[in-house]
Length: 450
Image (cartoon, rainbow, N blue to C red):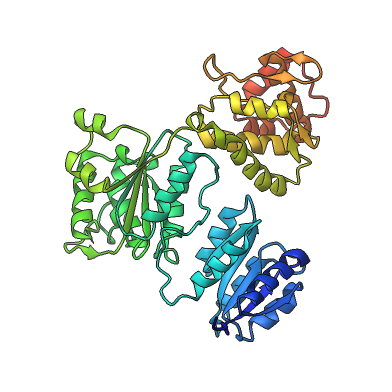
């Protein structure tokens, strides 16, 4: 076997992982060097003697992101390919690292085959997508999530227009961002547009831009979202809210790849990858005369449907742990784990707000729960209905009513925010008056309220 002469630098403060990588790579003929010191690793990498740098994200002294930034933003950028090493639950951070210049990432724990596969991939001159490569993209372990991940990996490198459908809160924008981050346009802009939030009178200007004096109040020329996304990706969320007039102009932009800036006689060429999303059935919108059929066929070249969370319950706990990692660190939470009863409660709940609701529920727990283990009595589900209810059981005292749970939740929130009514009401998603009424009904005294 011909010995490989590529040089590889391993920067990781975990001695076991560092030495394991060294052994695997050395046995395959690579010239591997290691360091557990982040600052020393940066100094070594900047010598530009290496073909690949394996870089851990979490290290004392200097974070891997800072090292990556310096390696990719020095006046003389190093030639080495950077592979990020990250723990489970930090995949979005790794994807962001790829956007900032990393070539690939590995999630711990990874096998020797996965390590070698990642190194061999970045060393290839042609770094095009390979269908068999296992790259974690979206969190979840179910067959459905595996299929969704595979679809995203196949679609991402293309420039095809994608239509993402699904209920509110299912993660349509996350899928769109992942498609962008794994595409050849990843180093360019991702421009999201919430079509439901744009006034009809401003929609055309917002999308296509305008010249100075094009209409009353247009005191200066302005780029539209299409121009901002040139060479990148434009994401139109809730596209069903666009009027028929704007739909006709959008259809022409897609067909011609030219943008008609308001007030300008000639159109501007753009190179934009378009991803659109909706929580409505566009075929019903077409039947109702609210959406153009020709536009539908233009935007649905590649359709992706995201199932509601209640239809892939196997992913609830992995998603919950993922958000516990994120919000536990953000809020300095004491929470470390879920009790068996709490896990059952999360899985039994129907999650009408889907992943967005799960995310918000976990963040509330990280803010309000004052012990390491989450029990069912710590969990409060908003918008509980007969269909959506989950078992709310206290392992020590038995069944609790929803009134008991709400009262306890409000008391914890008030205590956390030191009885600041405005802040607590905002956190709970209710107005100040409603909070005061609930406090009065539950007999909660704001003794420390200013």
